[in-house]
Length: 121
Image (cartoon, rainbow, N blue to C red):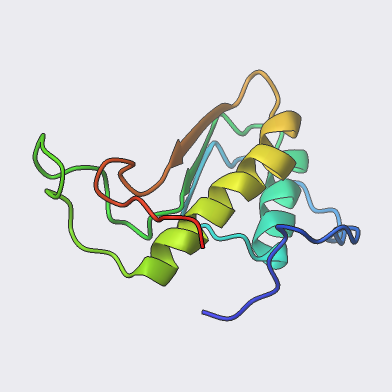
């Protein structure tokens, strides 16, 4: 997966043309990543959806939590996918969490922190 990551990028985010999505109540993005365009799309949805009640951002590409209640019980994930998921979590904390209206429930899921630990390089 090759994209321009928002992490470490100090340039401004683009504004998508305004278009109100008045009937959209719940949005789920599976495979949320740190791509600048993904963050821009997410911000557009937040800012232009007055009816939004729930936003779910899944950084684990659909590999949900532990399958069993012990370390090593998750589906295996490649190291580069785990690292990208951690960059995506940083992008959410940096660019998304601060602008979520109080009426919107933000759900963020990522790789299991017990089974998918990546040592820093």
